[in-house]
Length: 295
Image (cartoon, rainbow, N blue to C red; front, side, top):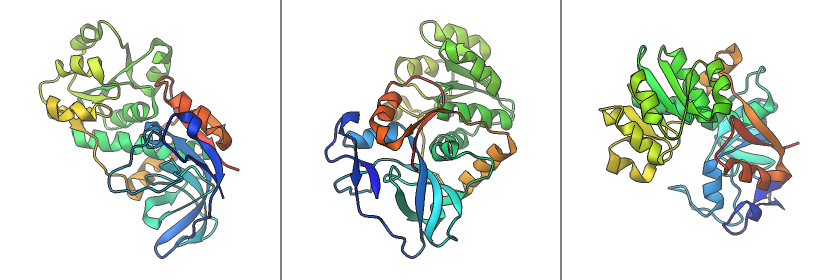
């Protein structure tokens, strides 16, 4: 099979299309012919040499931890269209995962959306659950135009919360469409946000902005950072825990199918252009999700 892979850690330039042996499904597993795979900072970290806890990775390594495609072997009927999650190996023509790690793809969901849907929406759902966001509270989403932030805005609104979203001015109309009150980040952020009365913070930027937001919420258990993991214990704030499941993913996909959860794909790259896709996500700018497409 063709796979996006690398034989040594490094920048986006280490990614190549390699011919690797096809995997096959064993008991309790499915093999999926991948149609699309999301690209995100997690993948860039793996490419740079980071090994997710609990995994022992050989060489060559294939990044990618979310995918969508068609089952052709294993516990589900051949031809079943699914979306699913893994830790690595999704950026390839075939992937084998436990059957419990996929859920049927709604007919209303295009392949590019399905390929990038899993990580951002589940991360947002898990984070809001950890924050115990309640109806009537005001949530500040810092970095609200990305895939996680945009999902969090919408899920919070569906749960009856008010939402403030920080983003560059170019993304403010987009955030208004999602139901958030947009605020530009940068100098003066605290003064712009403080009068609005924030109860809960979901931080997607970290650094100095997170330090400023700490002053707005007394209870540090109502602040969760998605990026400043190394400082979270020192600051006393939450980090996102594991909690991805096919059941959670199915609920989120159903919201998409009903039109209650929008999901924007910023750009879909043919898989041979994986290096360009990784360069784009490492800029840290832009709205929506980047995905790789397979034939």
